[in-house]
Length: 354
Image (cartoon, rainbow, N blue to C red; front, side):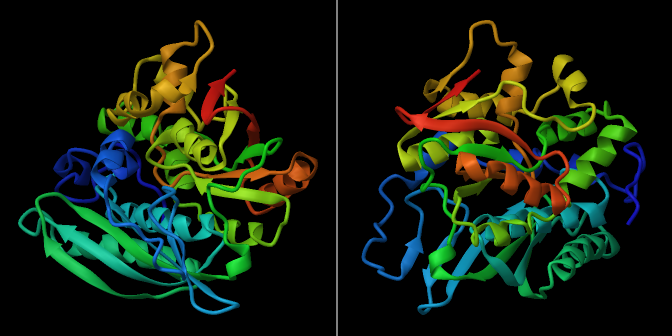
């Protein structure tokens, strides 16, 4: 479907006007989430649960047998754009990313639908679902069911299920010292979504927003076959710094991250002008004590490093010697802007920006 111009209105009501936030910027701040989950029942008694809540990973993984493990995740949020079809596409792409980040192959999805039925027409709601279904079809899976409610704000997403070999599960906690960090998509989705709501986005920026957020991270299912790939996560609501920090804490390592990672079109100019989401400072407040910034770093650069990414790229920890080959593979799968953004070293679990 052709992307609409940012000032077009495909629905009598702007979807983004019905939501207090949008995309992965809706996520609870990391510190708040950690507080809520503190004291949750331990999962160690479940011997077949390979990945649970203890490591803040992208999905749960349950061993089915010696050759199969089930990857299970759910992700949903409020609109980041007004076009209902594109909203559905973005939400579905984002949900499936968690399966790919674990090295899995999706097998089916269930729709999660909450809509203010007194404000949105059946046609608009149908278009959202059709957008999500189109992404699932591209991934080769059905939307096999789901659940819907009448809610104050529009919410859409998926329960996504996939399969992976138990020996090829990718997690965010198994990186090694000396690994190089590769990011598959440029940053700036949060800035662009904020600019969209503020009616400051240019057509080039809007096109970049849609293209990035609807690009499936399907290359993730190939990474589990590579012994040189030690850890993977996707960069979403907590920003590049937050998700890198999860890798550091899982492996007990220090990350060195470049202060100037690749950015989507028009993002730098918007960030320099002060455009950002409310989630960016909330992210910094949650984990800033574990990040070392260079003296004199501009605030707008810090905002980009904490910028929430809706349907963001994969962050891959790979052995340095094999990093060029992995980078070539990722670029060959359509991630032309993929780049090395840092490395992991022996040290305390923190991120150092240089």
